[in-house]
Image (cartoon, rainbow, N blue to C red):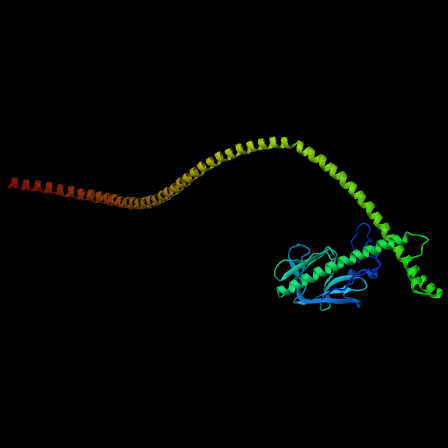
Length: 368
C-alpha cells in the first residue's frame, strides 16, 4: 500500500529533538505535538494493520521482556494528514499499550523469525512484537521502513519550511509571500484587503514563534559551546593525567616485580607450611591412634581391676569365713581343754582310787 505523501504544515517538525536550527518542543504549538496524544484523532488514517503479541522491555533490568497484552491485539500504522506524522498505535480494550511516533532515526530489528523490536526514546522504552508467522513480521518490517523514509521526507520539508519562514521574517518593508499570493489570486482591492489582513496576522504570529524558537536554539548553541569548552578542558586534564600515568608506569612495573618476587617467596613459604601441616597431621593421626590404644588399655585395666576387686571381695569373704571357723575351733578347743582338764582331774581321782585299791589289794595279799 502506498504511503500518503508528506507535506510541511509550516509550524515546524512535530518532534522533541533539540538540534541547532530546529525549534524545541516547547516552541511548537500543543496542537502539533502528536506524541502527547494517546489515541488516533479524526484526521489520522490507518495505512496498515496487523495482529501481534505486544511486549515492553523491563525498565529495571533493561533485558527481560514484559508482556503488555495477554493475547494478540491489533497493531496499526496511522498517518496524521494535518501534522504530517506517522504513529504506531495499539489498544487493548481501554488501555493504550503502544503510542509510538515514527522518527527517521528509529530502526526496526528482527531478532528471530517471528519477533521484532524497536526503541522509542520519547516513550523511554523498547517495544517488541511477536507474530504468528514470519510473513507477518516481514510485512510489518517493510512497512516500518517505508514509514521511516516518509517521516524523513516530512522532516526535511518541515525544516525547509522553517528556514524559508525564518528568511522571510528577516526581510522588513517587503510584501509577504502570502499577501502577494493573495493579490495574484484576488482581482479586486476589497477581496485583496479581506485576504491580506488575516494572512499577515497569521504570518506575524508564526514569525514570532520562530523568533522565540531561534532564540532558544541560539541559547542552546551557546550552552553547547560552553559544554564543548568544558569538555576540551577536561580532555586536556585527562591528557596530562595520562602523561603522568605513563611516566609512573616504570615505577609500577618495578613495584610489580617486587610484589611478584615477594609473592613467589610467600608461595614457597606456604608450600613449606603446607608440608609442615602434613607432618603435623600425620603426628595427629599417630596421636589419635595412640589415644585410641590407651583408651582400649584403660578399658582392659578397668575390666581387670573390676575382676580383681571381685576376686578380692570373694577372698575377703573366705577370710572372714575362715576367721569365723577359727574362732569356732578355738572356742571348741577351749571347751575341750576344760572338759579334758575335768576329765583328767576325774581320771587322776580314779587313778588315786586305783592306787589306793591296789595298795589295799597288796596289803590284803600280804596279809594273806
